[in-house]
Length: 391
Image 1 (cartoon, one colour):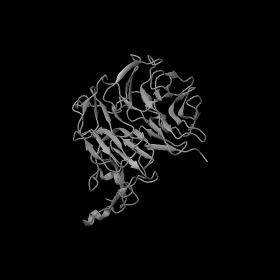
Image 2 (cartoon, helix red, strand yellow):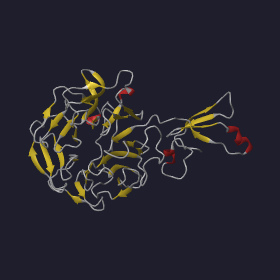
Image 3 (cartoon, helix red, strand yellow):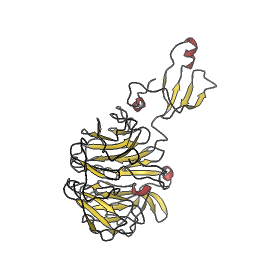
Image 4 (cartoon, rainbow, N blue to C red):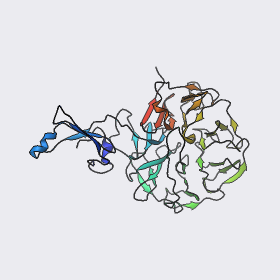
């Protein structure tokens, strides 16, 4: 079996499997040497099938150029290194050093995740990346210190029992049914990890030991400030409170947040490169805070962000501007599409069209912090799509 066009088919082993979920066998009625079959990962083909009649080997290779029917759970675009790191369902995820070829190193290993539920990078130390997912070995978190090219497993917090571990995303893109993403956060310098599986804990030694966080209720999904390594935030939309840590996640304090209660938002984002700048995506409108969550203001006209607020992200600022570009997949004025804003969300331009909707089954997206206008979109069944401004 020659899998050189798609090295991920080794699944972290020395050689590929002949297949699983094998189905759709096709024999060519005009060429007895030509046959294909489908598996849970690709389509294999041979052009020397009759060798088997003489007890000789048959040669098989992937017929698919690229990958179809792949569900993307999370995406990130670091500030240096590879432009894209992806988290897939079933086949783990990849570092994409070259967007034109299947990654030569294959999927993430050590450990191999069946699903990669979350990816977080340290903007001030971009070689540090963590991923959270599901394995058969019980390991839930892995750490990279070279931009995702090599990994080592870390200890999972004791509170993360199999019954309470976040299970990633389910359902279908743009149609609701999404579960919570993995409750993992990484400080801007990569020195601290927070994990919340009902009991928030933090680690300052790359996951070797975990300590209970003080002052933070469970299940609020803390996020890291992307410019200040000591700051973390967690939002209680129902209670109208913001919880803030200024000591690297060890202790949080709560304060009322103006404009937060009843927002209907489902996901909090810290803005690339700007301390204390937060967004709430999903619900009826995007909410924006410039003071670390003390006040939130709704934008007058914004897309209703898909997939529980996950189809929202930041990219490089437009020429002559300093604030990051905003990207969102959602519905605006009755039109579902992918949108970009270069002015803090005051106005939006649709960047796809009716011929490029990809089923409107978007699951996540992110902009590129180094290439203005580039956006990466994770679909629920059609792989990763990326777009650049037309020249």
